[in-house]
Length: 279
Length: 245
Image (cartoon, rainbow over all chains, first blue to last red; front, side, top):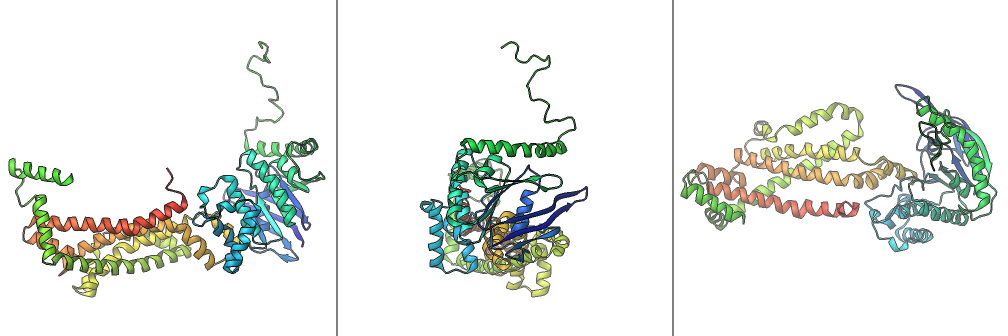
């Protein structure tokens, strides 16, 4: 298996301005690798993921999966979105079976496999529930099970845990490591959370904004399973944070008024410059 | 309760104060009497069957045409840009305006009334289908694409079920438009049916009969709404989790 991104660029042209979202992205993903795309919001990391998924077209360059150019979306690249994108008119089990139904798998086989993956995410109890009866974390588990049933080599994840509370997020990060270990999938995971990227990835790719480029790559060589509270992890996080800070500032500067500065206001003080003198 | 208030208003208004003439305001008892009379000599039964036959045929035709128009408009952007306004306009036009055409084209018969009914609800249905499909969350379509669905499969497995809530309410609206068209058509040109019985009541200055037919129409409308659309809506709302308070 090989997933190669060759000189991909993306431009959005609207009436008012031309935006250069991605420029000259060259990346290669190895089989079974867990890669995080990390960057400030607006750096085009989700766009890049959508291009790999085939949901958006690149303005230039191409994406090659096993030597074949990616032209449209397909079941060989499963995708998980930030919102679960489960279908509210289907029960949980039917949602999980959806991809297999599209592929024309027989009913019994479908049911059996769906239950296997529902078991992997620990939700067999809820197989006959409707989607609205699940919590946010459970929905993402079902979405993960649904993505796994496609048996794709590549799993693309677009900030799947961003909308969850931090406890649920921690649990799911641990689970995802386990499932990745069990299924040996190649995972491309988009996030803006440095800690999350370090916990999950073998390789973190930091992207810069305006135009979106690959700024730096970090290899994370920490023992798994990784927990958010381990010390060596904090060290790596701080390292990557440094690289990211400039980018965040750049994006913020483009969005805020010109008098804003990230260095200013590191100390809180009031108008007569007393720094807590009366305490 | 409603009947007691009605009787009271009748007693005070007609008998005590004499504000209204007895032939302008019926008492509930005379209405019930007329109703029983109409049922007994089978006028009502025949009328209801005739009317229901017309409305069902007309409604089915409008359903088919409405779905076809709705789907075509969604599919072809050119049609959408140029004909959406026209369809909206046609929908606001009361369908009884089509009666002269209908009579010219089909003559004074069943087909004319069925035509008026079909025209009355077709556009409501096609507009509902169009907006239902346009309002489907694009995320569902994207997710389905990544799972290997394409073309017709997306329509059948994603777009249709996702647009069902608004399509059902459009069908319900279409049904009520169909009723209106039916009544108008029958009053003006039919030889049997509820509208015609109502008109006979008018011609004989029998206000009780007019009222009795009105009651029948209201009851029929309620029954169909509860049994057909009400059930569909409840099951959809339950699935989507919209019934939680």
